[in-house]
Image 1: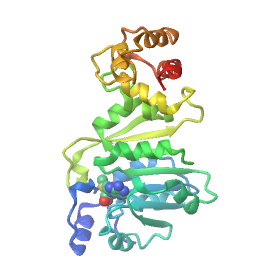
Image 2: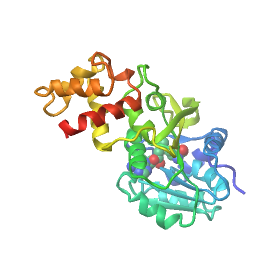
Image 3: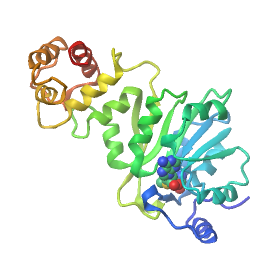
Length: 292
Ligand code: SAM
């Protein structure tokens, strides 16, 4: 059996063999530490029956560990130059399928139907390309895919915002968008030294576990997200002022906004960052009849 892909020596050998040069624009920072990879995979709680979906396998460092810990891995890779490398590095594993393409444009639901028929446990596990972390996570969560959750590496600063609780300076519309669908927790802080090349920012691994029961039932999801984004438009403004300036017709219908705040028991002088997700749910339902 070959040495693990994720060692500095083996990674350098593979890159040299194929004359591969990193594309910064594709967020290519490869992991070169097997221990870190094993710990990431452990946090996904996979079994021999699990299916794993990876975004951006690179030269296969994480894919290899997923192949050892699950029944099947399907990975989306945008960079065509990596395809021949992956067929070489992952040749020892017969349970891996690489799909060439941009995950943001892929029909992931269809891919899951085709690749994971009969699987009762599917996890997304990835060291995400940092330039598109948030769009990828939001796409995977909003498409109502049959997955248990996501374990992924991303910028520590984004992880802090995703997992933030009300009343903290990191809490905002991103925290709400993701915690609406999942329970979010930071499970690892990762030093820059385990990447090649090293990124400019600190990294963390988060686990997002899809909620079985929604944290809040809202009448209109799309409008709920409009209200949360509007409430954080200017962090130093009160919720009343943000909603008045951001909602369509808000300026002419200020009284209706005040009435909706009162009906949902939210003091108009509070700031968005102090509201719980449940309070945003009540507020969005109260605003809905007059603002959508
Ligand atoms: N998984 C590898 C590792 O941990 O060493 C590589 C991770 S690297 C941070 C991100 C990978 O995502 C790169 O291989 C990059 O080419 C790929 N990638 C970037 N944008 C992508 C997209 N929109 N869809 C699919 N893959 C993408």
